[in-house]
Amino acid sequence: MRILQLHCDSIEYTPTKKEIKSAEDIENPETQRLEELVVVFVAIEDGDDSSVAQDAISQIRNSMEKIGCKKLLLYPYAHLSSNLAKPSVAISVLKEMEIAASDLDVSHSPFGWTKSYKLQVKGHPLAESSKVVTKDSADLQTEELTSDALKGESKIRSIWKIMSPDGMMSNIGDFDFSNYKKLESLAKYESAKQRRVDESPPHVALMKKMGIADYEPASDSGNMRFYPNGRLIKSLIERYVTDRVKEYGGYEVETPIMYDSEHPSMVSYFNRFPARQYNIDSEGKKLFLRFAACFGQFLMANQYQMSYKNLPFKLYELTRYSFRREQSGELVGLRRLRAFTMPDCHAFCKDMGQAVDEIKVRFDLSQSVLTELGIDGTDYEMAIRFTEDFYNENKTAVEELVKKHGKPVLVEMWTEKFFYFVLKWEFNFIDVLGKASALSTDQIDVENGSRYGIEFVDENNTSKHPIILHNSPSGAIERIIYALLEKAAKDSKEGKKPQFPLWLAPTQVRIIPLNAEFNEFCKTLSGKISVNNIRVDIDDRNESIGKRIREAEKEWIRYILVIGEKEANSQNLSIRDRQTGDVRELSFHDFLNEVNEQTKGKPFTGLNLPKHLSKRPQLMV
Image 1 (cartoon, rainbow, N blue to C red):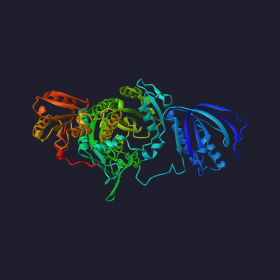
Image 2: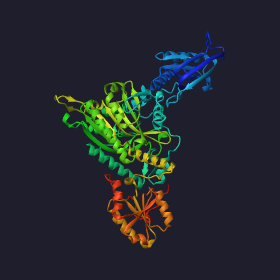
Image 3: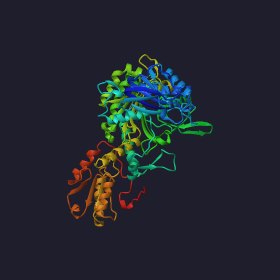
Image 4: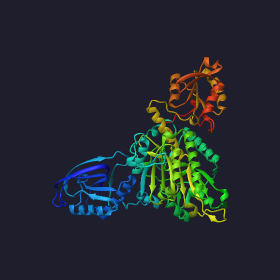
């Protein structure tokens, strides 16, 4: 069965003549006009049966719930397929679809007739979609070990809305996206669940050109190699996020990367998490590589004797690595990987009130972390997902989170609890291809305290299971680098000079001697700069000054110091500032202050390549 589904302001159609002998009989072939409805053009194919009809209506109903529409017109449309079912079968399947949709305001246009029609399609992100439904499509299963949550993810009953900072909820079809194009892209991406990438995003070329990372052909897809520059950037981000979580109150731990899939707690949790896994057979045990730090920390928390006075208690791990066997067509550069580094902080809370209070603190933490990493509120859009029951009981808390975000957000409301959590929010970076990638996120988990036997003693000396929050204040470290590179590519396209935040730049200052006569002076100067926690290198190659300056520019090096006779005898530094394009004279002290002001409060590490460029091998990319 092939379907074209349109959310319409109106449709008007007129049956003009019977096209086939077995066409439906209609008494008065008059013009029909319907308003505010979903029109489904449907071609019923050879082999379609009752199961296809039921599956098709289930999918149609699910998408109609997302847009808040309850009026449906089934419109037989043979032109969608060249493999049509016999008319008798087709009309039977069509009528079965109508019966299956009896909970909706449903009708169908006459089968077997030529009809003239005109329709007005709405302009929102979910207004148009196409589907192919077959007898096998609902039953396709791979041989890999797959969680029940993943198998059922496509069948979740969701209602999609937009919530404004004032708490007002709108149907997606009624919301004006003209000033919120990234939010519109997020809505399209999330509703379609289309993760496959058809073209390479800009950051892939940049990560190779800048010597940051590349695909590893000798490994499984989605496992990357990081060159010295990339490892430096990645390690600084890891340290910064870890420092911020520890300041917040997270206690750092370390847990194994593989677990027994037949351990009782694993079987239950595995089937509540929508992810594909790497599976390993070892000495009769079925193991899998972890997809998060959750169960390692939960098994650890099980060993603590806790009082309500200890809560919220926060455990944290920077997982290097977490593993998910994402589908091959979804893997691209640093955006979606099979092995990734995830800061994972769980807070064990005594009750829902404490959990709601704590999630607000972590929301602020996440916003702050992204800003300091170079990703501000204009770079990402927020999605928030919750069960209908949770929203009804905690409406004010949900609205407060949206208000903190300061602009409209995408809402997915589940009519029933499907996962282990009742609320999840996330910040999504939207790239130029319209793909959304979750960065910061948090969840309110109401199941795993009990599943893992984690207990605390409350004020009445009664044992209880905590509610658990799952927060990554940055999201995967690799995704942060992806977002920074995508932003840089966008800047370059707009005529701006791309660059990393100075504290993440592999080289912050480059010194270029006019000729070999000044090499020793440059070496001394670099030593004075580097002892002030600034990464400085020396381009002492036998190349022209112009070429060496151009190459420093191409490496996004912010500050360039060309040293000749004049500069060597001056009390000041002559600084080429790539950001402004100016050449300025500053005292040594003022220059140090300018650099340190931009890197204040951030971790530091030295160069991850030889200081002299003449000593460096050339990376072939």
